[in-house]
Image (cartoon, rainbow, N blue to C red; front, side):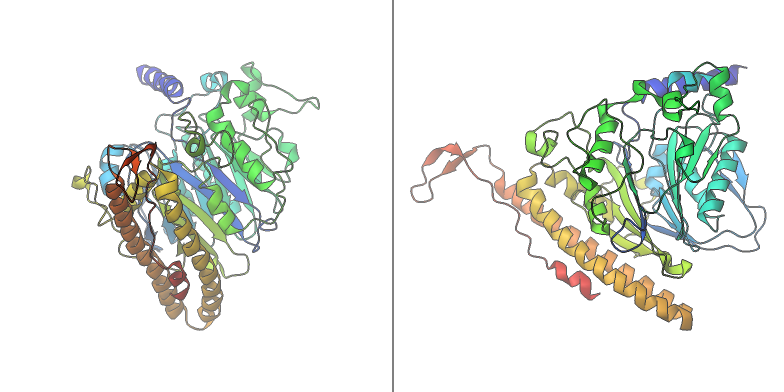
Length: 527
């Protein structure tokens, strides 16, 4: 009884303390008929205001190995049995140095497996107090730090992955309120996890898109072609007196499990800007009381690079831009507290073993770069796969690990986005343009080779992606050096400008010298 009491108390304390400051991510979905190249695109920023370093990793397929287990909860107190065969997948986990102090486990963040199945979890969301009181979180239940690898290592399709996730929730319960996205080459799913045991998942349309901050969006399950939900989803709410029904008599999930009391500008504004960026004629100025649908139609086909820029959005051109207005109360999508940001492409035209490409920005993406990691690769580059040892936590090693390089580059560029940030961002944009075009051509080439010589195809794709990753790391170190140099040159307590001819100080503030980027982004298309 005491254990149950302490667990409920911990849940209530967590809810109060984290109602506006917990892990705060943003999710994006682009259906294959809404994308410019016919691919499914899923994206998420993995945000947390800590120095938690991440890396890339490939986990190999394992066959005929019985008796293995994988942790369900973050503290590794509860384990789930694995089948004899588990599937190869890529991930972006924490480094050992971070795991040693985070208390969260690996947090694979985003996974893509050899069958072209991807899952990203979580965008943290918030249920109301009545729902959590009726069905509290399970302290040793499933978390965002364990769910991805448990599901993706054992699923051959998106539908199977959704079913696997629901079974885990039914058996172990949930330790958090989360949003997950799951997809393969043929379909995509969205799931909201409300309480310890209640959830709802819907199949997403192919011709629509979605952008959402830390908030639930589902209202009526009848609005979707297919859905899965917990057995007591309606019963729990009805018997505990917090069920809200629509005019047709159907349970309104948002009103029931979330509601206006959980809406915050912190989360809602990111949902708004996503809708406004992709459908500007349909969405006007931000209003906290407005409801934004989970799915909507974009005005134009959405490119991979557009999604990358959405993940960098800092409300540019609006009154809410912290950079342009100096505001310090804005939570943007392109936050400098991102641990990693990922954009997954699933190509229906390719074999499953080649279909999934994860574009990863280690650390914040605002002044970072997305580099590709295809599921066919045997491993990432040496630098992107490097794992800072457990005992090295606290060492900011920007010369050895890409995460630290990009973290510092973002930190410095954000001090003055015009002088330091804009030249860096423009360079990475040119680089990404080249990489996206080059990667599309490479996938098509490797697709033909895969039928004739799988081993050679795997070797070539591994080398190709690793080459892009290594170049990005070397360029990032050079850019960091150029920013440091320029900041040092600009450093002067005397802020007044000088007459260049007489040396006399003026009454106006001097104009700082911007960073001069001398690197050639076109080289990324020549890997």
